[in-house]
Amino acid sequence: MALQWMILAYVVAAEAAVAIIVTLPSPKAVKSRIVSLVSLILQPSLFIIPFSAFQLLDIYWKNEHRLMCSGETCTAAERDRYEKSIYKAQRNSVLCVSACLLYWCIYRICKYHRDIQSMEEVEKRYKESSFLIYSVSPDFMYVRLVTTMWKS
Image (cartoon, rainbow, N blue to C red):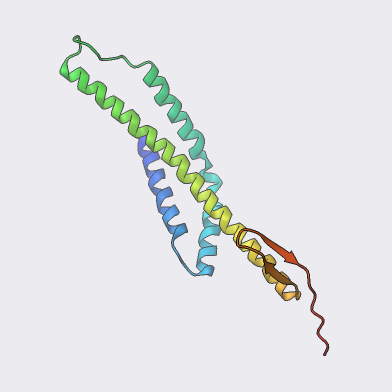
């Protein structure tokens, strides 16, 4: 039973390391290579979402069908075992939720980076074709097509 939790813990640790690597400041060329590599890895690692969901359902089912240890009939050892199982279930729930959350964060970081790259490419094309880009405010950006007429 502990094998799936060990695998999930390693996946969460790997996701945390990837999230740190992707968010570290680095030169643009290195950053684009890292993000492209991580983007290639993201699709096959999507298995973690249904795996975590299945584990959460398993925790919920076990919680609903767990024998309650309350009252005077429980011994100290039974009460300790009951509390330990509750703590393990809470730990495993946090592990499942963090796996899904880290995957989503890495996905969004890579998507934002790709969007920024595409915007930079569009801006570069506009500048090369002698279009000017005016910014009205930091929140709203529009493109005003002005061709420059250079007489040689």
